[in-house]
Amino acid sequence: MELFCADLDLVSNIARTISILSTHEDCCDSIVYHENSFRSIVKIFNKYPGRQDIIVRFGYALGNIIAKSDNARIKLYKEPGAMTAILNLIQSYLDKDLEQMKSPTDDLGMTSPEWASDGSVEDVIIKMIRIVANMSMNPEVGYAMTCVSFGEDDDGLYANSLQQARDGGRFFDLLLMVLRRKSITESVELVMSTLSSLNNLSYYALPEMASEGPFASRQIEITQVLSTMLLTKNEESMIESTRVLGNLTRSKEVRDYILEIGGISHLVDCLDHENKELVFTTTGVLVNLMADWDKRLALKESNGVQKLIVVIKRCDGDWKLASLICQALWNFCIDSTHLYAALGIQPTNCLLTVLVDLLDEEKLFGIKEDAEIPDLIAESSEYRL
Image (cartoon, rainbow, N blue to C red; front, side, top):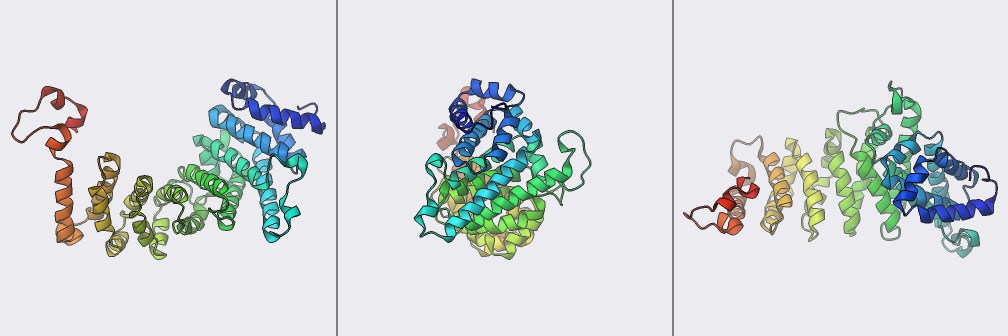
């Protein structure tokens, strides 16, 4: 491919072949270990940016390769011009998408040419975002994209901190553009891919990391966009949004912003959902928010304490969720000297009743009151807990 990249028919056939081969792990390993494989693909990205069929197939292949190999993630990130080429494609196809949105009645404008029938504008954006999302699963790459600030002095992967900060910032700006422009009802896969990318990258944005890094400088903008996602009826997007908020709320600046916009009441509303995964991720956000006294007050005023108790009451053996709710309530009460004053008399009594019932040994292990505990149960890790 590196020798015949000017032959469009050959490149098109290679793209089709590699996209199929990338579904096999051994083939992916061979592509990664080939010295110039990524360089050739980046060259194709730059040479044929308008060929949606070629771009989407190579994008699909790269996403598969990077999903399977950590070495591939680092290799692609270090490949000169790779990030710039990927970001240019996202930007270019977002511009095309905007043109299509401006002329929705123009059927010709919405139809891809015959040779591009295998890749729509949105397909290309999804594939490119997926590449970066998978690449950021490597901690070094994730940190470089999220936390490396302008002028940070380092060696190795972070040697070119200026370009890395620009690339990271540009990628976050593009993700924000997607979430502000696209609807979850019309572009489910694109929005979910974008949220998944934010989830991967926000994991590395610890409060003690560079406050001027690409992510930290945009964390309020990201929180603002995610807050609107909680108002949708799409549970998948709400779950992914609360996952990102779980990472974001490690920052006090973000916690203060959520309080300011009334976000705690929206989070409390999420506790009413039947979807246990949404309830779990929402509770994780509340655990972080309870680090500050003013957020505890807002939770109480939003009837959040009572709702948490209702949720733990119907956990139905889901100990992971029950433990997280207990952590949220513990954080809520941590500075209180009197439980009744903190929670209220009725909620406190209700919580104690629920906890006693959950820890009932007869229900858990079949041990009746005053009965001798069998050795098998006594020595089990579950009972020792």
